[in-house]
Length: 378
View 1 (cartoon, rainbow, N blue to C red):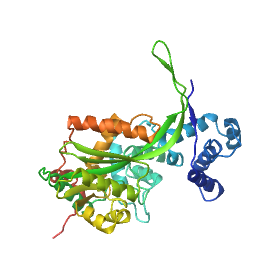
View 2: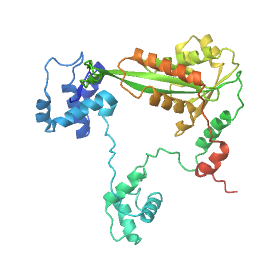
View 3: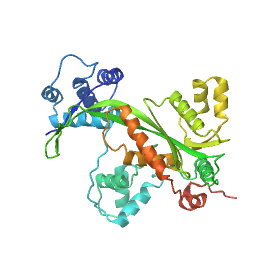
View 4: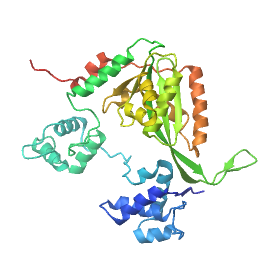
């Protein structure tokens, strides 16, 4: 039986989509997706007039399967995913060998020719021919090679790795690594904190159980919103605290920090490692609690921030990946169900006293990330 997906937009989501259609410059794909979502909306704020897939298909001159794909993407991946281009997973056939590929990457990572602000695909192809590396080369072949290696030299800003000789990154990275080297002490625990969203997806029709134990499932889904998962784990002792909230505001974070403090009542100072987000600030405590309580709570903590492009240094991210893989890698329709399932997972992990075997040290960083360290010419 074909899967069916139901669109239910919030009032704010409808407003955003209506603005996309009525004004501003947007790609044809975003406009198309916005039109589909608005006309297929069955939520409380939708229009009373129902529009069929055939009518939407006729107006936009697209196949009805495209409409179904957009509805599926909305339900399974969320509202924002429908307004961005989905990366392709297609693998293209290699047209140059490994040696020429290495030379192309070397050129792409070098300075562009004089008079050019940046490398373009055609400029790189011409350069490969000019240096007699190939007889001819299309810019699309250049694109496929760079895409496979996640290189985009035509972008002025777009790298997801820290720039070479980044003193700020190195300083923050080594500080985090030094924190991880501290011997375990219950009076001064090291706790890592991170957060992640979870889409809530509901099956509209219940499955029918047959006598032989199998089920007939009507795959019709709708999105029930999203919830936020706060994760705090003490990676070297096997302890963890997980809290499910409807949002991830400054107040939500401040209340979670209070929960962490209450779990470590005997601790003199709690070192909290986390990403440097605008919500993860001491000011959030003062916006949530009275000044005396905020100051008392802040004094319980030492905040340690991972550097920009360095969220992988936060061990709570590892624990979140385990949670998503073992517990949340399925459709869950309600936040209360998420709380119940996550609670059972936490109990299971605590009973196993599951820890994280962190191997990356400052010594390793000096070798593997040598390019990030500033070079001093004395």
